[in-house]
Length: 364
Ligand code: SF4
Ligand code: SF4
Ligand code: FES
Image (cartoon, rainbow, N blue to C red):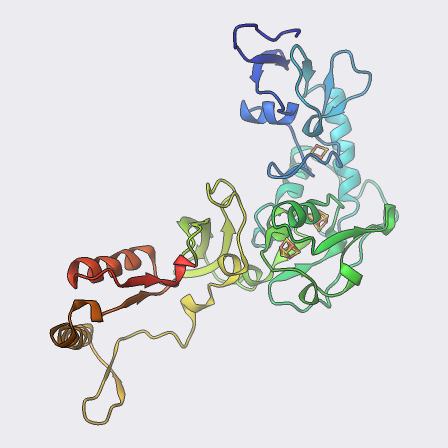
């Protein structure tokens, strides 16, 4: 059992001179990450099965001849691990430079997606020279895919397969896959068709895990010229009863995009097409900006003040209750309304009118 303590204490390993406890089944990377130690990674997404493709997370383990990928190597009691030696850092720099040689654009707008800055951050961290290695490149762009949500620019793809893995493991969709190998490697849909003709549900998860911006949130990018700093506001998607956490991006008073919250307890970064992309209604020109009240004589709907509209609603509801009883009223709240409005709606129906006839399309 090596370092394993006998009376229930947890096993430990030594990382860069520090003794760290770990739970059975954890990888070296997970142990380091949980203790706040920073090991660079590129093909890693904590929600996915270990892949071990990019080798950036390599560490030296005493007794092993070659460095091992920490994201794919289980921690063992008594291990002595080094993650920051000069040799490892030089190796990582070379790896980053080789990977960057595949990219047409090493820097992309953060509106591309949640993880889109990872590649650029590694270039900065290692002061890497993207033009150091020249030669063949893999990946053909699919700019003819005219879906309104997801841009696919494989000139910026580094074949980390995070998109393919998240589609299979998180979304369970298998809409995309890897074709060919080496410089002919290509991310494809079935029969190499367009995304909109595939099994894709446009959940956006591939976009949000892509570390280079090869995949892009087209709706967010369409807002790239909206002036102002991008702010994010944590909230809960209102569309259904799952309760996915989202970070809404805004500039001034305009919503410019939605990011999934990777630490959302209900969704861990997963969203559906509505939570990810369906926010146009907020600023839509057809959205009603004032109440309307029906003219008693002509029957036409006319703009009215809130006081007038509320008086008319109270009059109508009061009449129904007086004539048919409180259970004749049935309230339906909208999944596009804020949570606070939904809460007030049910309080109004339950406490105000005395019936439990209240529903919301979010209950689906
Ligand atoms: S498209 Fe992005 S996530 Fe997919 S393999 Fe290429 S770089 Fe990785
Ligand atoms: S949007 Fe979702 S379903 Fe479509 S390819 Fe990406 S991960 Fe798969
Ligand atoms: S992050 Fe471990 S091999 Fe890519």
